[in-house]
Every structure is written in structure tokens, then in C-alpha cells.
Length: 339
Image (cartoon, rainbow, N blue to C red):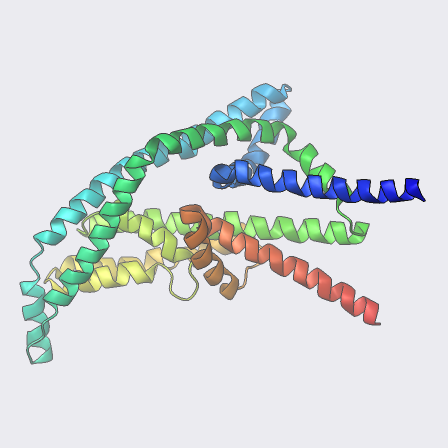
């Protein structure tokens, strides 16, 4: 009896200790959770490239090193240049709002509507709020730059090992998931489809729309095109609204300011190029794979940005999509039990 009692308490002691260590570990790495998630996502995106390189170069270490360097060349270096341009444009936008003259827009609007319309104060106040928010964000970014450099190093370091050992880690996790074999296969398939649809379909499309939008803003004389291109990336992910939330007000602003050519040019460019990209790129990337429900995308993006920052536009919808997978599997099993 005493032996059974000791074994009973030993089991609970082990579980309590294990839970305590997990919580302590999470607290220890809490500042780098976003970095870890970023490393996992980038490793997933570039893993097919790693496999191709590894098929030519049999050394896993060299293949992983080359793939990590590719990530630096394709993503990290362009992001550094984009961040530099974004900071410069943010500062310019901040100062330009102070000298903004909207009298011509106000006069044109009053003439067309046949009455006095005082919109300059409203527009200026809102632009000032936006510019102050951008300036504050830029300042915070510069202050946290040393920490971001460390986080980038940690992310690349983790990616190097994830390319080599990621598949074995996933296989080990799959073996120890307490589900039936058929459930594991279904879960793995749907999980893969959701991640593929989230990263390749939703995010790639949004970034292409943002890049094309930035080009259009530059062509048709919109100040700070890179800044508004980044805003286009974020809103392009949102269902129903999309990139039109940026290019349409910009086109109307140009028309109201008397810039007829630029205004009409941006209007047609937005309708026939920026907003139609989604109809061509997304289906060609996703194909017959899982489409994510618009409500999941909307709630995921808004909640994700609030908790995780910019990376939340990927993490948020992904978390909610995975939740729906588990919910579907639970309902299927409950139905089978009921029968």
C-alpha cells in the first residue's frame, strides 16, 4: 500500500514539475516567441528549396547554410532597404502634413456641391493624428533596433537547424499525438492545406498587391508610395475591403485636388490592376487547397496585429484556422460516437 502511495505521489510530483518547467521556459523565452514563430514560418516556406539544394548537395549542413543565406538575400536585405525607405518616407509624411494646403480641394468641393464645405480642418486633424502615430512608431522602431538585430540573428540561427532537423521533429510529434492513424493523416493534410493557403495564397497575394500599389502610387504622384504600399499589404488581406481602401481614397484625393490625369490614372490602375491581381494570383497558388473563411481572416488579422504586431497578419488567421480544424475533427468524432 505504501509503495502504491509513493508511486501515486511521484506521478503527481512529476506532472507538477513538468508543468512548472514548461511555464518557466515560456516565461524565459517570451521575448523571442514571435522570433521563433517567424523562424518556423520561414523554414516552412523555404523548405522545398532546401530539399532541392540538398538533393544536389548531399551535406545537410551546407544545404541548410545556403538556404539560410537565400532567405537573407531574398527577404532580409530587401526588408532592410524597405525599412530604411519607410522611415525616410514616414518622416517626410510627418512634416508634409504640417504644410498641407487643402484650400484648392475645399474650393473645388464647394463649387461642385454648391455650398460652403469646410473639410480642410477635418482632413488636416486626421492626417496629423496619422502622421503622429507613424512618427511615434518610427521612433519606437529606431529605439528597439539593437533588439531587433539580435532577434534577426536568433531567427536565422533557428532556421539553420530547422531546415536540417525540422522534418524529424514533425515526424516525432506526429507519432506521439494521441489520435488514431486516420485522424492523424486527416489532421496533417488539413493542417498543411491551411498553412499553404495562409502563407502562399493570402500573404503572397497581399505583398504583390502592395508592391504593385506602391508602383502605382509613385507613377501617379502620391507622396510616400512605399508607406502606402505597406498599408496596402495589410488591408489587402482583409476580406470585402481589400486594397481599394487605400487606392480609392488616394485617387479621389487627386481628383479633388485638380490632378485629373493622376486621379483618373490611379482610379483605373487600381480597378484593373491592383484589385484584380487577387483574382488571378490566389487561385493559381492555392488551386484546390483549402480556402480560409473571410470571417476567420478578418478576426485573425485584427486580433493578430493587436497581439503579435505586423507578423500577426499571418499568425492570427493561422491560429483561428487551426482551431477550426480541431473543432471539425471533434464534431466528426462526436457524430460517429452518437451513431
